[in-house]
Image (cartoon, rainbow, N blue to C red):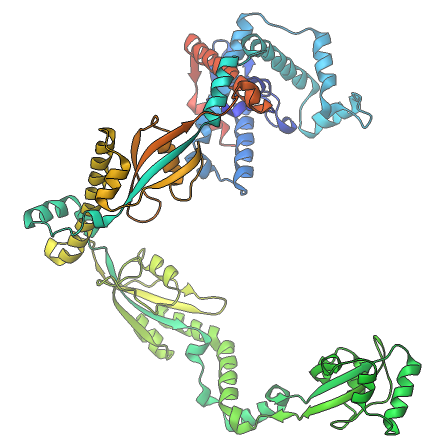
Length: 629
């Protein structure tokens, strides 16, 4: 109940200290206010009251924390499903009973101590780390709190601390307990086990008719026929109304001329290059090539360049990475060599090794493609007109079939489909556009009624209508006998395998050797060493590891296998205690956590006792009032 107050160390002492003042001073009313009369309060504990606004502030804070935990804003309905209203009420009751106890004990706080506590609050310190009155006023102004309200709540917090310290301050953990924890956590075990599969209990004979009938009667709901619905639908997307035949030859020819580049493959050239260390070397090589003293390849060989080093690649003019190289290369004939080019990475000479001429697809090869593209563009343009015409026809009394036919939309009938998209034979009904959305809507719709269309993507619709409903019903055994027999065998196989595993476990518990039992069953004994508590073994899983630590040495357990429909019979063969295990070998935080847990338990018991001692009254009307604004 008190876990809501956890603080920096995780202990209940810190929880109770921070019960009044939490992050950014968002919740101020955890403890309630001590009143002499009956006011507008959510709960009363003795003479302590928690007001409506205090409950709402606490509720809003917990809602904010819950939203942060899930990474999204939690609605009021979702919060109610989480039980947040009652959780907050329990929080306030826990704080109020402690404050009522403090009131009866006449606990108080001197003004000097209150001033010191306020000055110690880091929220009120300036850049030099000193208490700053201006910062104090600014922070309180930001959260809409008066200084007197803050001081009263800070005083209540400090008084609560006196109870917390009296009950749990300095709580320690006995060395014997920590030694036991070290032994418990450090222990490892060796387990030997057998994996039993279905072959041990197969073949499984068909059940007698009376057995099958009785089993079917107990499990008939699993074989019931779901509700089926018959649908008519028509899809409206651009391709459904595109009419390529309506595009004339003249329109196709005009489109071809206008978009000729779309049907052409630009000229490409394979380019080689030699990059020189400086312009002088490039000019010298270019002069030798132009005077036929050396070839392009010979110059490259003199520079130690291989053929692979020379090839730049095959490019269109636009794709050449260096504009200067593009200009030079596309001015040459095939096998032509350029003059010196001032490239981006130095002086160079290029050669055109091959020219792939521009290829233009002729009109007759692309006319069908153009016709379809133009028809689809036109369909996109008029789609909303078709949609409006369909809706106008329905508004005028036309049926789905009549309205769809008027717009030349194909009408598809589905004789029977369940909510999961399966037909009565259990096969998927394919082809329903937007199937998930259409079926969800269809199973909410009334038969033979007009429904709002389902949208498809950014530019499409499905018009649908439920034409018939076949209610869900229980099937007779003869209708599903094969499925029933198959499921009975499956369950019977699992039952027999568990029974066989238990029989083997009983043999081992009676003293039989695991190796002998394995030999009789022609199974291999497998071994797992070094098992530690809480581990997730790849073969045994968490359940198997937990089973190995649930019995003493030589103890036996049976579990389901991680893989398939199998059983495992496991026997603990060795138990190893950790060497030199003691509480001193545990991490420091472990002892602190246990100490905090002991303190939590004491404070939890105190709060429980105080709740029984004081009269706790909850005003549900005030709770609803708090949540209404």
